[in-house]
Length: 370
Image 1 (cartoon, rainbow, N blue to C red):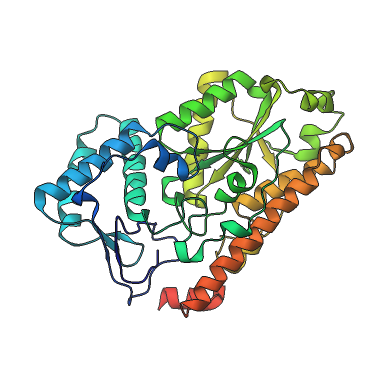
Image 2 (cartoon, one colour):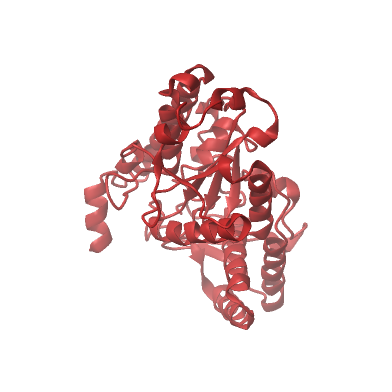
């Protein structure tokens, strides 16, 4: 993550895969959080980043451990360099400590939870007083005033199942859904964070397996198109169900928000949990959508794959094409997300140009391999 030289409550720790990595001229930022104040992440701060959940216990514990280590070794946390990762003497001590704790954990589930919590804790510490908590862009590039909120149809709820390495990533598009629709209509669920996953699965169990879908091309199981899944012939009474306000009739859609490699592991976790609860795989929907505008700044493995927000646009647009659902305003809701994508693209492009960086995918690829 990029920023001018500065000292704040934290720096930045976005993953190496971020397309907004700092240049060699950008120096580290240091944490001054040990000088006073409550070191634990407050509920207000946590929820300001885009969630309605309580503060995850392990995230708060790791933040406290890192602050304690900072005091014990008398070395400030600093974040910088390519990928905005921990640097300096603190990194050496913290790396040894967290590796030892990780190796001592008893099973793969505990290790996953620790990995996820540590990634998120570092991002929280590294982003204080640097990123806008709503749009996840540097404060000087905040785009919030340009976004227009919109109400999502009450019969639908999105779940952004996000990998920790995408949390607080500047060019992440999943964040746009709760910025446009609100945190209750588009809920954030962080992969490997038990409090988040419990909230999501509680909602799924209440709704029932027939009202939960994952927007993911599952190659190991048959997928259905939006038309085949929700047309009047295959789902009689759908319009009536969507018009009911009872929460039990809400249709839940899971959007995997991470790299394609990480998404495979995330989908396996969803699949295993669905089999544990219902004895069958999570149902999948395939979309006809193609490349999104974000291809201009953020490469995808292929042009037939798209970003998270564009997948939501595709779903809403295809639902609008169903005659029995055409009165629910899905076209306007899809347009609101498309407009938000344009705002994000413009903000990221302006930042690149201002910092003297290429916005061409080809030129950036050349620089990556040089």
